Image (tube, rainbow, N blue to C red; front, side, top):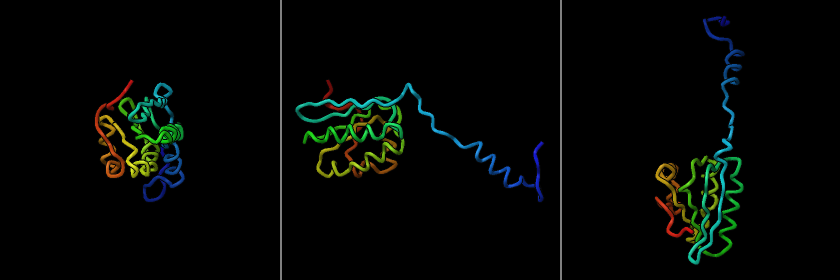
Length: 137
């Protein structure tokens, strides 16, 4: 039985409780936890991303790109095997746009992630390419 207050509305304490009960909590999928593999070639440093980039592994994502950038060669972040990237992962790429100013950062993304990048304006700051990276081992 639902309690109805005056004027036929649900009391505010009940509305607050309903809002609290409906709150979503983030639960990562262990099967999609991200992995970041660094690969060196003569021309560039690659960071291959597998699985999800989310709030749990954003630090590892950032560190892998920064570690690759110490080699003084262009860094190519390969997201072709990335299944999900949240706003925290996007923020890492926005933070590292100073690498792009040096001409040292490119992102290769599948169409569904490249579309997200276009929506948030990332291609204006970072070189975003569609498809597969040029050199892989």
